[in-house]
Amino acid sequence: MNRIDRLLGILTMLQSKKFLPAERIAEKFSISIRTVYRDVKALTEIGVPVSFENGRGYFIVQGYFLPPVSFTNEEANALLLMESIAGRFGDNSIKKHYETALNKVKAVLRGSQKDKLEQLQPQIKAVSCDFVQNNFAYLTQLQEAIASQNCIEIEYQNNKNEISLRMLEPVGLIFYALNWHLIAWCHWRNDYRDFRVSRILKLNLPGKAFSKTDHIDLNDYMKLLPVNY
Image 1 (cartoon, helix red, strand yellow):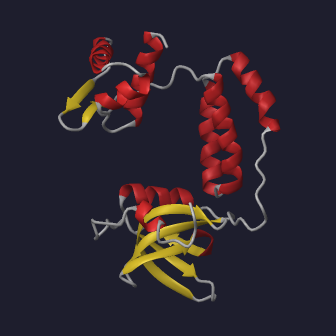
Image 2: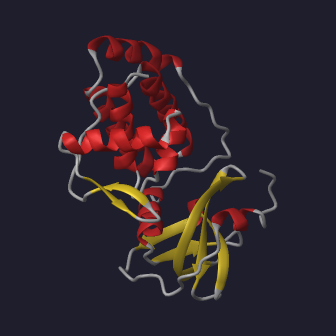
């Protein structure tokens, strides 16, 4: 990899992370820490506002954004493959947003890349069984609530067709047993509960922050599930 491509790669990493340690950059591009310092200095010399915080790493000052200047054929093909998967296993909200995101990628592709992508697109299919339930549009809202650590209020129908109103602190989303599941701290039960997203009848965002600050790690919760990963 030449230095220009490496600098663009480092810039892309900086834009995708809140903080980026020099060690991670060195590992990603197989370079020394000293070379990382030189590359970061080169970015600052061309006007990229890179700063550093002890113990956390490099970061780009808020407000700066440079869109990707190009994608490799392999990167574009990978995104096309994910579009097919998102269409089968995402819900209606995810399908909509992934389609617009992929269109933005296509907009910056070279003409020859666009032609290859259009030829490849109809040749990529993902088939899911009839048991996968994704005829809802809650995943985008749930992702936002998890990321912002805001409570949600849901009307939920369990497997006995009993309907209840729950105030939840959403911890994470897991796809298992052919369904999306929301793992959340339930204010009513005062414990963690597993909610199948397809059984959510209504979802409201009351704008209330989490009251609990020490939630279980999702990887630890997954160990409690009756599923082998």
